[in-house]
Length: 110
Length: 113
Image (tube, rainbow over all chains, first blue to last red; front, side, top):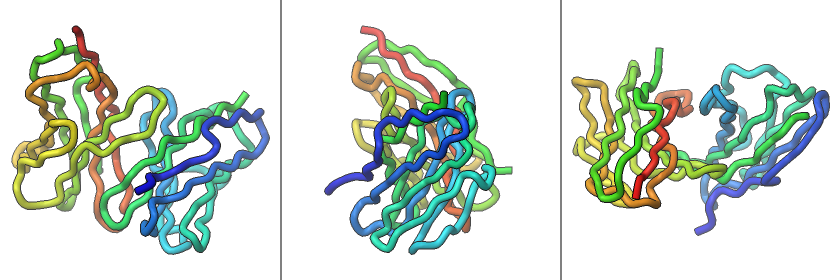
């Protein structure tokens, strides 16, 4: 069974640009979660999508947004990039209460 | 407030020695508890989870964890560490309506030959 996949592996942007990160969940999982792992800040919850709807979001500004598609894959968009957005962005999918993580996208903002 | 504390930032053990990583949580309701492992630059791999029932849970790679409600703890153990166990270990608590995971700050494990 294929795991959670994320693309791209690495992404380099400059301040003020927009970044789009993608996630494909494990087959049969309808929930997708996004987390940010920034140096010194640990793992922080960003967003939760289920059945195409945003169900919960963490304490992040509105320039962090996303969506979930009918096939349950998801996009995370970060607008007006700031230097402190540099981090590993992890996607997880879940059939219920257990989250399974992908390999992450390393976003570097210059 | 919901939180997870991993008191040990960095632990070094010799290969073949036993291991215990500590995790304490604060959570209003009955928690779902997890241990994940992360190798450098990689995602998180689920080691084990506790939802209810037997308080000693077995996971992958020979790891086990014990839930102690009275101590609000969920410590991870392994009887004999292998060099390939060197990684960062995260304890997490979740559940409830928000479904989000709250992570501890992680414990970085180094294994000496």
